[in-house]
Amino acid sequence: MIKTHKIKMYPNATMRIVLTQLFNYRRYCYNQALEIWNEMYDESVLMADKSLRPNERKVRNDLVNNKQDWQFEQSARVLQLAVSDLAKGWQNYFNPKMPNHARPRFKSKKRSKNSFKTDRAKIIDGKLRLDKPRGTKDWFDIRLAEKPRWSGEIKLTTVVEEADGYYVSLAIEVNENVEQKTGKQITGVDANVARFDYKGANGYQSVSTMNAKLLSLYGRITKYQRLLARKRVANPTNFRSNNYRSARAKLKRDYQKVTRIQADILHKFTAQLVRDNDVIAIEDLDNLHMRMNKHLAKNLHRSMFGQFKQIMQYKCEWNGVKLVLVDQFYPSTQRCCRCGYVKTGDEKVRLSGNRKHHTGHNEYVCYKCGAQMRRDENAVENLIQYAQVN
Ligand SMILES: [Zn+2]
Image (cartoon, rainbow, N blue to C red; front, side, top):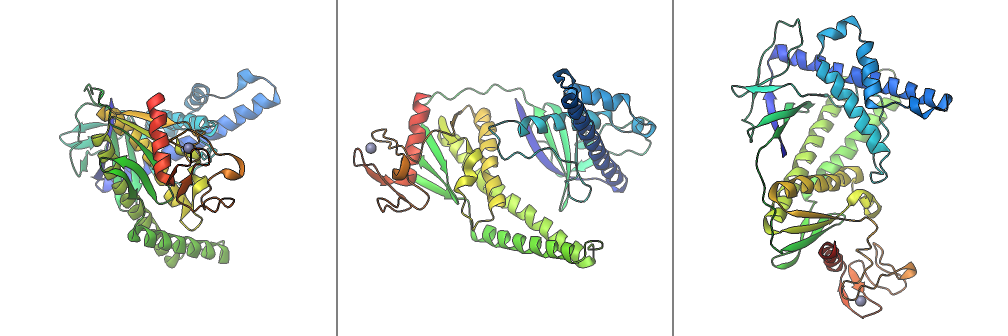
């Protein structure tokens, strides 16, 4: 089982330069690979020959065979993993279950995140030792803020630069057999605009994914984004003033705060879910944006639900909990959990309720069996029933 731990790290001045070079090299490799990928694809279309289509192996071989002299002093792993990430990017882009996934784009130095991956890093005496390319003299182990939480072989190391410094994510192969829970405690989680609804020990409950701090941060982020955009429009050739830089730094810090608050909410909630339950049903949430309220900072908040699914997937695995991903076409909102009747046409419950029958936002009234329930309770109950038969 692979477990990941993200740790803050403190590289010295030499290693900070090395890291910057690695970030740049990874971006260079990715962009080169994307260019070759596009060329191969265009050629296959032009020649009407599917056997010429690009894939990870072909693109990697092309890059490796055409290395320039200076590249031999750079990490070969960074190159290989950049190509592998690009291949995954294409796969996700063509995956119909991931409609939000963007087409792979060239990474710009100004806009893209600084990161690279390697599978040759080690932990020596509590410090991170990156794989040293041949011919390099000055090389130091990097101090870490804490020890890795798990022991085992390090499979993949990802280094990123964030607003307040450098972080490393260690994917560690952990040798442990998790016993699948055999109990019957089952729950469903219905994700809503600003909260999760679920069924707990004390009946139906909800956890808010929104608080005053987040709201104010969303507001500030919108403000800075507009400010920066205005500056770019007003002076397109030379907008990198000190003011611009300082606003951008503030924006990055606010992004980081948002990420941390959201992660905190998600980790507490998911930890509680896997502790208290044996089977959990959640929606396959990729289409959740349909339900988003236009007043929320949509992208910021939407990303939370993608993360929710991801966290649930690994936490359930780690804890022997069965996770049921409910098909995205399952009508958990429209179905009556008492009699199974599914509403269609103008009977449907919308976000604002139902106009024809004058029901409210949070009401579910079944026109077949006459049941009256809260809309989220009905949805949660439907998810549970789905898990029971699937
Ligand atoms: Zn009914």
